[in-house]
Amino acid sequence: MNGPTITRMVGRAHDLHHRDLGDDFGVFHLVVDRPALVLGSAQSTSGVDLGRAERAGVDIVSRRSGGGAVFVDAASVLWVDVVLPRTDPRWVDDVSASFDWLGDAWITALDAVGIRGVHAHSGAMVTSPYSRRVCFAGVGPGECLLDGQKLVGMAQRRTRNAARFQTMAVLDWQPDQWIDLLRWAPAERADVLVELTTGVASVADVAAPGASGTALRGRGELGEKILSDLGRALHRHQ
Image (tube, rainbow, N blue to C red; front, top):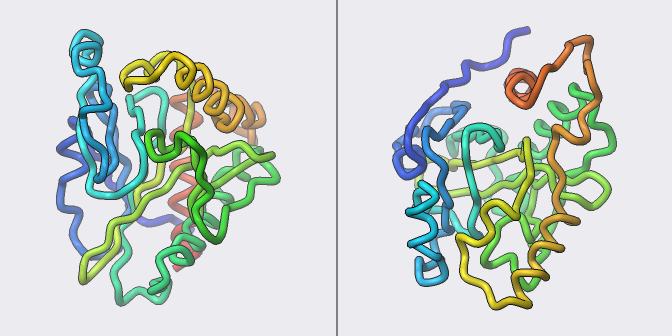
């Protein structure tokens, strides 16, 4: 059984976040052509070292959904957005519960690459001292965890006609390479690095080699495999 069409879009993070994806059901693989630190809708650039970002060639952009900052580049994350129309039978008015079906689809996709025992968080957001500033420092509804470590982050933005679910799996987690794009007190920096190092795992580190009979050679092939399996899982959940 074929999965739904997955539309691949490549561009700057700002353009991808603000592009109109329509109101019909759709799955979108979004790939940035320049690294970016994406701030949540309530975040200000006052907490960002703009000079460091410019020197590093990292865009600073804002998204319309809430939460903390997320670092994105083409190699280290798998970014998949899903549009769900309000008329779809999977639609749930309760925002927290509305992530459940999507979390289940991600679990199916991760299982296909040998990542067993993943569960999707349900209920209220679990916060930490740094989760308002860094997305992966907290755990929200639908987000996927393995042994307490976050693998997939999620956010959602709703209009009158549809919801745009933004999901991201970590392929290569190296927070020390971008954490200084945000401004921290010295003690805060040490603490947040410990929290992000212990609380998040990259799927490349926990996936089984040669899962489902496929010899996966690197993060790129792993991402494509997960994307394909996620598409099929989303189709089955229709």
